[in-house]
Image (cartoon, rainbow, N blue to C red; front, side):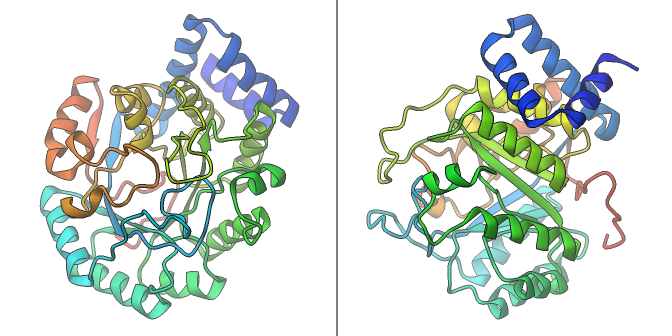
Length: 355
């Protein structure tokens, strides 16, 4: 057994205390050479399941309205300075058409928890997209909804669902969210999504207020038990119109190490190099791929609305983050010895009969 596989088995069997110690060691004590070795192990395990492919998804941020009041998010209900918009169905379909012509075969529809989008409205939209583009996957990221709602959206044609759990520590969850939101409800939603048969994504912010090595270890335990198909993590970046406005901006390094550790613990997971990582570090995308990430989600939203989807300050939405520059991003990925891939890019063990 090689070193990467041995370390993977170690992480899959580790207790919460052992995981906290591993996280602490690699983030605070390991040498640069040890951190490089960790990233190499992560890339080795990723290649065993996905080769050198980096999967492209087209991101459509279709509503900046949100009923929630999360303490970290610029779209929070009480932020009266936020710019609010909703894309019409026609505008969303135009984004899909543009993305399809570029080559995308996965569309990620993301919004705040906007009450305007009833099941009927969302199901109609998803169904329309699937009728027009039957060879494409539709991923939804629209927050907490009842079981029946998730079921209806699945029946309408949705394939995947992204719902970050943000933290698996209940006390930490309450530090980040108002009293009406609970970790128990968030985790129940994720379990419902898995039970229904979605390809499911969870994840968390790195260096969020109150996060410790111990809470991160709980995240790893939760993810190991949930076995999601995707995990999205990125550095916490404060927004000036939230209660955490004065929280310091982190560096990218901790996120990169955690990307590698997650890849090693769950070798088959689809792992994005997030916009937040690219926002905090000009080379964040590249470093993310070299740390074990294998997904990128360029922004397909109409240019005039991109800056309004401000979940944190200075969020990138142009340049290499924008779908219109996808060929340059693909060129840079190729230069790393990796392979841009515009297919559906399903989780390696998932049945792709829908294709």
